[in-house]
Image (cartoon, rainbow, N blue to C red; front, top):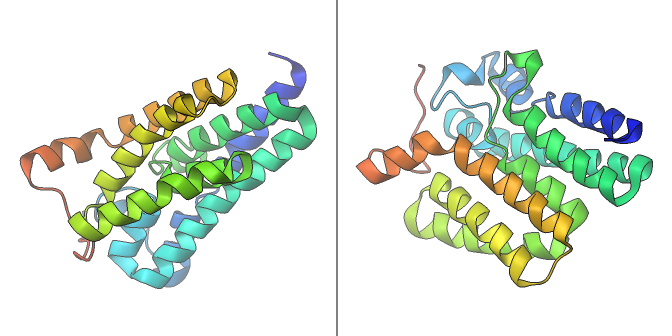
Length: 200
């Protein structure tokens, strides 16, 4: 790995540590969002705990840092730089050293990353996720299925090999972070959108 890519990776990782979900919850209610609901520092948990306005702000903030990281990575290191930045900003969001490695699940940040790299892919997948949420009320199911479809669609549409590999890595991280949700979905105990989160 070149020096440029190492620098980009560090910048992106620590940018990922800036959790909009955590900060919005602190600003709105003075709480640590990781002590409520799913214990996840993500937009869905903010939505369930604090409502739609806070949830939307958290989503937009976490998506924005993904897009910003990719732009910075591209400016410094070109195509390889944007891929490294996209990967490490999600790692930083999911496992933030500044928050004791207890972050989110990376969906909003991944969406921001892909808006900056391939917005058409986002335009194809996000509506599918929205339909799944409307029908089932399970945000986690929409996230899991969307992240499963994502790399397959990248492969099917003949995207560059490095971006296809990149998409499989992002998908693997997202599905891994949703492993507890998968168990709950199978057991019929997963929380639906609109159910209020409780303090852990």
